[in-house]
Each structure stands twice: as C-alpha cells, then as structure tokens.
Length: 149
Image (cartoon, rainbow, N blue to C red):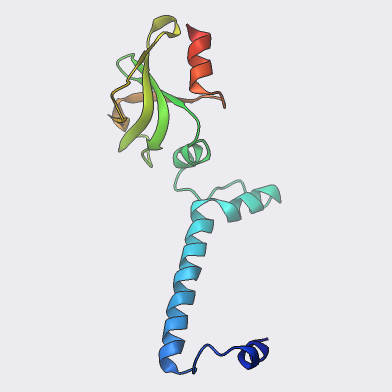
C-alpha cells in the first residue's frame, strides 16, 4: 500500500529525521489512545461482559461510581445534617480525603424545599465533611425541584 501511495504522491524524502518525527507522532497517539482506554474502563467493561472479571480499571470503587455518574446530579449529605445538590465537577479518589466540587448547586431544606445558589459558579466541600452521597436518577434538576415544591 505504501508503494502505491509513494508512486501517486510523494510526501518527501524518507530519512532519519523523518523517522524520528514519525516515531514521536506515533508514540504520542499511542499514549493518548492507551490513556483514554484505561481512564474510561473500556478493557474492564469488555472483560466484565465476558464474565472474566468483576473489577474496574478505576483506582477504587468510589472513584468508579463518580466516573460512571458524572453527568448526573448528586446530593451530598453533610455530617452536620445539611444537604446540597449539584453536578459533580470534581470528586475525591477516596472518601476520606480530597474535595467535592459541585456546580449548579442548591441547598436542600426540610420537606424538599430548595435554596438556589444563583450567584455561585461552583462550591467545594471537604470529603471528610460528607456523610454519604446520593446519585440522582436521570431527571432534570428543574423537574425535580418542581416536584418537591
């Protein structure tokens, strides 16, 4: 195939400088593809579908749960009893340390009333202040707020 392309169109003379450039480009592409496959649980998803393993490629189950639900709203239940709902932008790799960063956040009050944080772009909480995390089913936030009023 390369002989056919070379006869139709020439990309230039093949020398050691071109070999280095091509090797670097191929290495970068290979690294990006491998990184994508590993960080998106592609290999383990395939292996789980064939009943070869139950494992994920994520660091911990905690991190995997957030990776799989990152486009869903979550509710953080804080140890002091408060609750806040928002879209997770960042989350800790472990439940004991790190921070949660939420966008489009609302405080949840008793009887499911909300206080919208209209002037807040993102809000962060220490992982150690969070008691538990709820992953909200695929429901638009506006619909959820309407049904709780």
